[in-house]
Length: 349
Image (tube, rainbow, N blue to C red; front, side):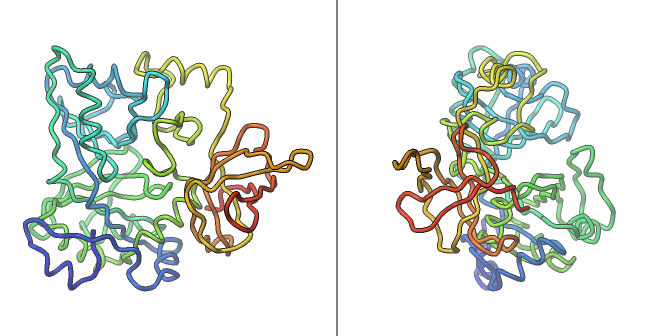
């Protein structure tokens, strides 16, 4: 991760030692860039798996929750690996390269995802390799993100087809692909770890504003974008976390498909993720419980998984799972181990 220019330039060129940047010094300006211009997020700690072989397409199609075989070359889509009970085991973006597929995973998730895939392999002609060391993406968010990418590359790109394009820019081979960034359409660019700093600087020169984790979390909470390992794990159904774009109801059988289809047909979700406006701006811990009054007794009806200060609401906002009977807009909750209240609101993004 990028922390400061001095730290970045002091890193070894062949393997930069990135450190998490909470902010680049001005959170309101970073947020304003996200809403009015283009902000740039460091995602160089993401992982990547390469799945190859003559049977890779049919194998992945059989186990993954979203379309695989119908993907065109260089097409990118969000996808999931579910448990047999239909809950989320892995979240990732899948790109097709002929008979090879690349899965860009959340930070630290590649090895576990590779082990999960291996559980389903028997005699298929499929090879799984962890190529995280060669994956160092950055992401662009905001209404001027398209313009920044065009200024950087010297040409415009079509985001509608969700297709990755490889271009040569200033001696760098850069892969440019549409991506969902903090819950909205954006771009992911990857020049590998050797050129990650040069790519970052070039995008800043093209008009992007560096932004840290604080702003990225504000945006994704305002937009209702669940984060794997924080808001989503193997206790959550994809519909509960609003991951509808990441699974298919039409592609046929896959691991967990029967459960997902039953939920779609019959309903029955016991909880779902919602935005919660907090009546103060003090941070709330992940796992803070939500309560309602039930005939004078406090009844637990939900849990908070992410918190951020919302510039849109000018107060704290959270993502939380709320039980079915208590999801009406305007429902007010008390907080388990914290002062104040939470109110169910529309996603402010």
